[in-house]
Image (tube, rainbow, N blue to C red; front, top):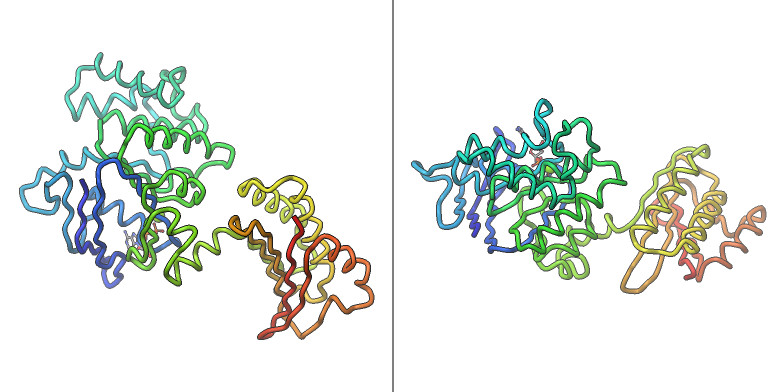
Length: 357
Ligand code: ADP
Ligand code: MG
């Protein structure tokens, strides 16, 4: 359905996309993940010609997009794009937002467009908002409307560019639920996302992009559980762990605790263990003497069902486990952990705590 050959995009001297080639079949759900600034948005924007590629070939349903004489607006309408910012028309009602495209571009009758729009609003759970204006709705509701508006144009392919990253965390799931529903209905989709659990569950294939190329691709299991290449592995490791940097003894303990709670919820770790982690984090930080550059890292391995807390502190070598003042804290930490180890390496004091489950 989509064939991309040697696609490239330059902005002046900056080569943002370098030689991207992919084939995507009808009904596939592709998640595109990777660090920011690596060309994920540019890739989507080139696919539907919001940007003009510098080189390469894009073929959609057998039609080449970049050939002279191709009816670009018509082919572009086969692809709906959902942006991070919802881009609804603020002066139009929700219903009119959904019908303006079909009526003006597809020359549909108003009544027919209205009927289809109401059907789509029901599908995204927002039929009762048909006569509201976009700014009367929450971010999650506006994004669901934006998805419905795309669907009103009957696209064969939907492109999503970080559809949930402008949303309040409480509204992410309602938008993801709508995308899941579309996946069940067999829609072909390419989704740039930071929601890794979602990407893992929904995708038929995952593209890991780095520095303008698709650096590694595979099934969700391959990419998330067995990445083959160095950078993919580092990225997956990074997004699966919680990292908290501290540079003052007056650090914000409540914020740290909040992040631990979120991390645990995301990985379905029980409240009991979540509490334990919060205590371990606080006590570990109490052991420290030099706060100029501390990094607290928490990682969870689903496969081994193990939780690891690492505290790296820059400075001269000090083993906090051997300080007399710390005796009670250390005893407590040892009771909460399977092991507590100290090491010093390249100017950093490292405490490694294997958390008891
Ligand atoms: P991602 O979506 O992966 O974060 P983007 O595709 O948005 O990355 O951007 C990739 C690179 O291209 C970035 O370095 C960005 O600064 C640059 N870039 C994007 N759009 C433009 C533009 N219109 N002009 C110049 N540089 C751009
Ligand atoms: Mg982007």
